Length: 164
Image 1 (tube, rainbow, N blue to C red):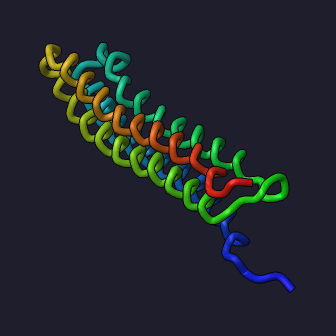
Image 2: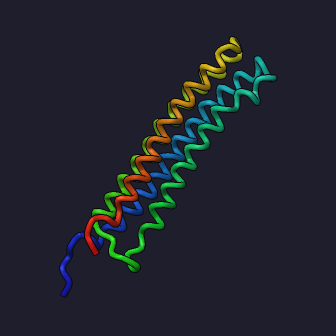
Image 3: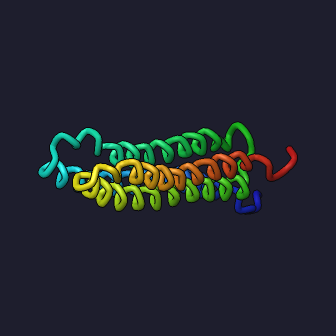
């Protein structure tokens, strides 16, 4: 007769972290792409020669989904209860890793979308604002990068819960 230790449910939390990383990051990427894409389309009516220059926020928003994909792959490759024990600590480490990366990507996507929309419209009226817009977008993208870094650190903690 085996006793329930709670570790049987640990992979659920690990897989939930992988899903959260990808879903939230892609939500941020989709919002940032859509919001800044509306600004590009609106600006393109007034100044069509600036459309390719104004596509930068759309590209930056798309990168956010890649961050979530990276963490999801790292987490899912670390979940193999048949090969080595997978404890609740490991599941929670992977869950927190996914949430850190995913929610950071979501917030960065919202920032990129709002700044991208307003920035490309303003750039159409005043071209000197381009560099300022790019700097703000870089700082918004850095938020997602912070989440990716913390997610990698947290996922690396999985497997360190007990001395085997």
